[in-house]
Amino acid sequence: MILSITGSTQDRKDVSNGTSTTKFKQWNRKFFKQIRAANDASGKPHLGGFCILLTVGSTGINLTICRLLEARVARSFDNGYDTSNTGGDFNYHITKEYDPFWAFVEKSGKPVYLHPREAESKGFLTQFPEMRVSPWGFHVETAEHVLRFLLSGFFDKFPNLKFIIGHDGEILVWMAWRIDHRLRKQGWTPESVSCHTGPGMKLGPCPENGLYKRKHNVTWYLKNNFHITTSGMFDTPGFQHALSVMGPERVMFSMDTAYESISEGAGWFNNLSETVHLTQRDWENVAFRNAAQLFNLSACGA
Image (tube, rainbow, N blue to C red; front, side):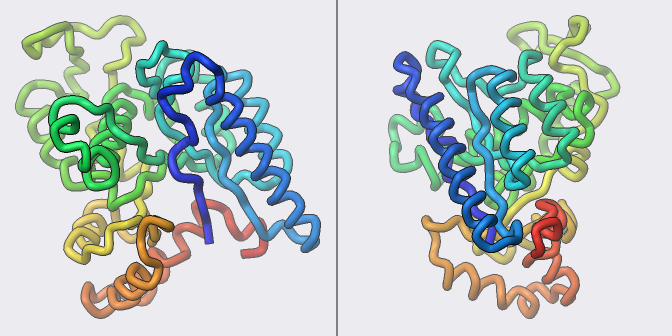
């Protein structure tokens, strides 16, 4: 079983008092001690842990990540936006100051799990606050976070980075074709390397090293830099579409514990081989082989 902490343990109210940094350090330290103790007790490194992405600048990030990597317990990085150094605005870790961190992650070969965070409460979400988190807001926020990476040329700088997103691809697997289709129709193609220059969808030359250059379309980056999980999406037609877009090597079974019932999710997945006519190999890929390979679980005896 692979577990990640829900969100990044930071709330938007902690900008001024510095508690976000303390939380991140506490969680990393707790994971480190518990996993290391379990490994030492068993004599074998059977357990791997997730590391929360710190928000104290690239130096602090690298030092903490290095410590976990050297201990052979970090299997992935858990990431989301933060507001710790932005005066309350969301920071999506996409600016140049984070390039050393992303280069470090790319070199490590470990994936980044992009965990949903609650969407900013405004407009529709103010009128219908019950939609702010898991019914809708989580997915919209995460989809827009991912689009920042997809549209900015980020993966051209770090072509070997591996990201994971849950919930059958956080809307994007459904919308990728439409996004690429309309961008192409409107002239916003990777080939034209055009940039948004202001209101009214004007096209213009990109600034030097501008954020908006990219070599490929959204679908290409999804299929080459992303893996998705089925977390909390026990929906067979949705699974079939995700499988057709991403392929059986980039989809992983996931539960969304403790928000969802393990028995319900496991029962749904166990019936897929009949309802979707999956081959035994594809079922095993989604069930455990893809995760074992992506997280390099063979290195710890899995």
